Image (cartoon, rainbow, N blue to C red; front, top):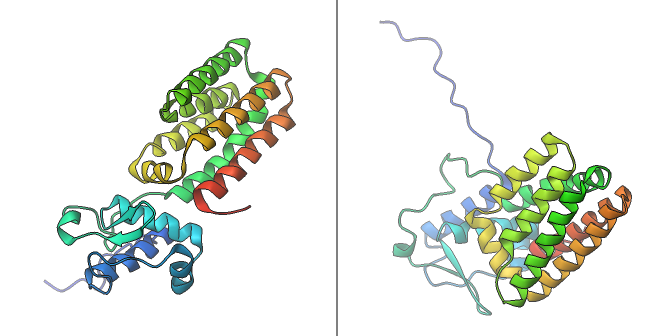
Length: 240
C-alpha cells in the first residue's frame, strides 16, 4: 500500500506561562542542576534570573510545591525535595493540561465580581441581604475561634453573585470558586492568610453589605475592586 502523502497533524497545546516556568525548573531538578536538598534562590533573584515577573514565578513555585518537587520551610526558604518524595506526581514537561493557574483564576474573579456586586445593589432581595449578614456573623465567630473561614468566604461571594440576577456571571463565579478549592490555592492561602487578613475581610464584607442596603451600585463596585487590590498584593505581591 502506498504511503499517504500526509501524516496526521499533531496538535500542540500552548503552555501557560506558569507551566513553562515550572517546566524549566523541573528540568533543572531532574538533571540535578538543582540537587535534592538544595535551596532555591529568593523569588526576586530567581525571577530576574529567569526573566519573568514575580507573580508568574510565584504561581509556578506553588505548582511545583503542589507537585511535590519543592517544599517551603517556614522562615528558611524553598528547597528541592528528595526524589523519592515526588514519585507519582504530574510533570510539567508533558502534554497534560494542568488548567488555569492561580493568577489567571484570580484575574478572572477580579474582572467579574465587581460587576456582580454592582448589579446586586439593584437586585438583592431582603432575604439575600439577611443571608449575607448571617454569613458575616458566622465568619466572625469562626475567626474568633481561631479557625479558617474559607468555606464561609465562598458562601458570601456566591450569595452576592446570585443576587446579581445574571446567570452567566453567577455561573462563572461558582466555577472560579470551585477551582479555588484545588490544591494550588490551598497552598497559596496557607502561605499568606492570617488573622489580620481575615479581619480585613470582615471589614470589607460589612462595607459591601452597607452598599447593597443603600442600593449604591457604584460604591459596591468600588468596595469589591479595593478588596481585590489588597488581595492581589497579598497573594501575588503586586500593587495594581
